[in-house]
Amino acid sequence: MRKFITILLALAICLGLSACGGDKKPTDGPSASSPSSSAPAASNIETVPYEFGITATENGYIHHYNAGTSVLKTDKEGFISSGDFYISLPKDSKISCNKDFAFFCYDEDFILDSDIMADSGLTLKFFAPELKSGSYLLANDCYVKFSVKGSMSDIKLEVPKGHEKTVMAGSRKEIEIMPTIKIMTQNLDGRDNAVNYIFITDIHYGNSLTTDKGAALLRQVESAVALANSIDSIDFICVGGDTTTGMYETKADALKFTTEILEPLKQSKKPVFILMGNHDDNSYHRFTYDVYYPERIISDKDWNDNIIKAFCPDNIVKDSGYKDSKYYYYDLADKKTRVICLDAVDYRAKYNSKGVISELPIKDPSAEKHVSKYWSGCSWWGYSDDQIEWLMTEAMTAGNDWNYVFLSHMGIDKQTNCYDYDTKNGAELRKIISAYQNKTTCRIGTKKVDFSKKKGSILAYQFGHIHNELVLDSKDIDLWQICTATAGIPSTSSETDINDTSISDKTLDWKILDRVLGTDTEACFDVMSVDGSKIQKWNIGGGNDVEVNQ
Image (cartoon, rainbow, N blue to C red; front, side, top):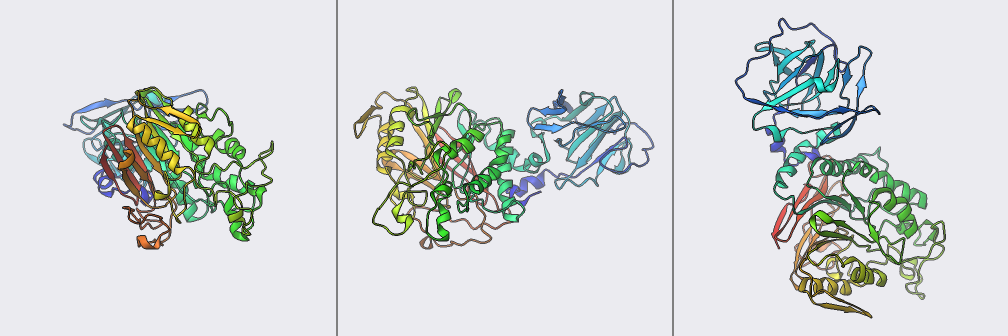
């Protein structure tokens, strides 16, 4: 099991998982002699039925209410197996079948060599039995998958009374993160009415998946998907920008690596929102010679065609006046909450019908270095005038009793930025938020909106970019800002003192994380739960858990 998903190792140890198993000439292991009798083991533990819900479909897949899909396989002897589908069962669970069947039991490291209990207490090694029809008791907690000469519905499960909610199921990848799934399921118990989501940001993927670091980054994305798919109350996943390094020699490579690291998100059963970060337009290719090649820059059209259309829901709502806007909103109607996804890299370079940029917008015509002369992800940090107008006149128009959650790659303004960079239109964004929270009128330029009849609130503003953690109570606008630390993995911490960082305002309570590849600090992304009464943040990996009252 990957170390980073055992962040609360004590709980995983409490599960006491050790493999057990047996079966009619199992396809997963060698055959052996049958037991001396077929009487089921005696037990005075009260059990209750557990419906694990495997159903074969025409296309050869099986489904579970909690586990996605898994290939249904049939061997030459007519045994159907559950493929890459496992169920966690506690000790003293009963497995029964009126057909010849097999079950394969695995410990947390998916090792098959463990014990089961059957035949009035006779202890059998996994490689020994050939199980016929009958009932068997598990001697230990374990992960189980099945083969049956019939259908999966012929297999009946019973678990000790009171353990029904502890049983979980899924593919091996989902099983590997099961301890974390169990913990987060408990954390979110009773929070069904809150807005619950996963925020992962600043992945900075730039290496082949064959490298240890690249594979570890992919595991984080896969784990985020497994969590979202396994926990009903999670509403969506947001990737907060800087998905790649943005230092590629061609646009094609930049898009290839972006889609490669995001690929697991296509398996998400929950909506996925992708934000653009300052690295994601590939403008950091200029570090090679400090010269921009505009044709290498990912345009707004490129981003929409290759990223938003591929990963985000069809019913996101973009700027009515700009079809390629990288900012949009999405409504959680059952929770009366509008999720607003901002674009902090909205510098509006012109592009042709194929999305190719021939010239970048001018920042300072007298400058010699391209990073100072042109606007790009390297130099433009903030929100365009058009985006600010859209926010006022289109995005913040939900019902009077609706709430909002703001997501962005960057914080509101210079206070939560770095290198002392100002944030374009940051003051205007703060003004809009303040007016909404205080239920007053807001005027910016020629546009005016009246929030006096609004009864909802902005529940949270979440961002990344700074690579360190922050939970900031912005009292002047009555809003919590939450910065999630980078998911990127350093071999050792390069920043141990706040004064050594590029953070603009070092007086804020930033948390610098010391994370190491191959340890339980390897991962870093947040599971969030926000409503009008409190904000709860649980970090998966090397970060911190926080709870604050609204």
